[in-house]
Length: 367
Ligand code: UD1
Image (cartoon, rainbow, N blue to C red):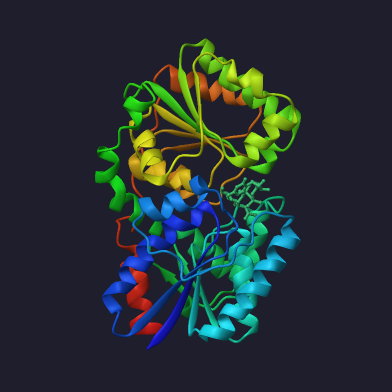
């Protein structure tokens, strides 16, 4: 029996691991697969809702780490995960994405002599101010294998002297989850629940520290939403806990609540969010994964960031990157509002089968 642990911690991890967990069921005679949840995200609608929506088995271990400074969170995860690895003695640890849980579990396992595979390895924004960039660089440099989602990742890893036999170009497990959930999203009643018409609203998400932790920057983004509302465009904004906390801290909550055409909601589960994304006019976000999900849906996406680690969403997909300055965002918004749309195509291997490739490689090539 090969023992494999997959680690999840924060919201963007769940949809990447769910298809891997499903695909390992085809190898139940040769692989024992465990899910460890670090508890980096712990709110029902930041965590539990995703297990339900993605029909994922409950984690075998829940570390209950919670929030804290980067050092504290990373250290606590490492201490707890070391005990789990000692108990299970896994042959392989699979980590996904770029959150603190990813780097913490990689460091722990590698130092215990356990092989580590990084799903979504090789992505680079080349912006070291992003905590995620540091997490990606550290994880890739010490793990044994990278499963990559797009050509740029293969190129980045080769430039970093990663040998070919450690790189597996498999596609995107986040898109596997989208394929899995599209029919379920069709049945969602979220549009009726929020009294929305198809293709008439903008779906927005904001949570990146560089956009929401600074009061002046956050206020300029509120002004963008006010501009859309003044132009009779409805905006749906599911509020990330970090953003909500900062709106309260800087005294912006009542101003935001007063925006006429803004629908503020709690963070949405996976299926409802997918339904909202599929039926909106366009998306405005600073997320990493949503850039890929909109590209796969051929939906216009305006990404409010200076860099992206997912360049195929721009060179091939429907994503537009705009530096998050009010006057620059307004230029791009006006284009979208006047109907100027980019056509996109779906990147190679974003076909719903990435997890099948990963599990095949684990069983037949790594072991
Ligand atoms: C983390 C990831 C980021 C990812 C994002 C998706 C890192 C470094 N960052 O950022 O890459 O895009 O998740 O959501 O790993 N909180 C709650 N409930 C929760 C979780 C968090 O209230 O379930 C609040 C806490 O006050 C916490 C804050 O949100 O301090 C931020 O959470 P944290 O996990 O530190 O980072 P995110 O901003 O969520």
